[in-house]
Amino acid sequence: MPSESKSMTAQTEKPNHYSYLKEFRVEQCQLFLQHKCTQHRPFTCFHWHFMNQRRRRPVRKRDGTFNYCADNYCTKFDETTGVCPEGDE
Image (tube, rainbow, N blue to C red):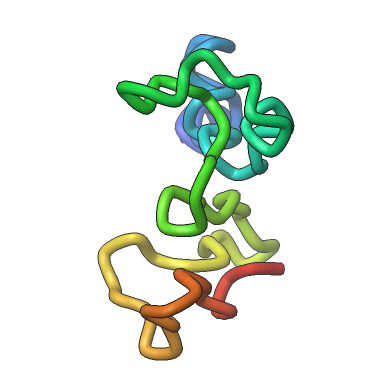
């Protein structure tokens, strides 16, 4: 039984996969702001260019839950700006 709890806390993803899960499109592309991003089309850039591409960084809280649930639509989502303040800690 103790090995089960250990496996739940250990990182089981490959480092490259883990970085995508945690960091993909959570920061704005600085090259895009300078009009120098060569990965703008077909949107292969690791960072976001427009607010509607932005992801919130998933964070596990101390109680084991995440800061937001991707399955539940944000009730405070602003269609104009693309911002949802819930889970954006």
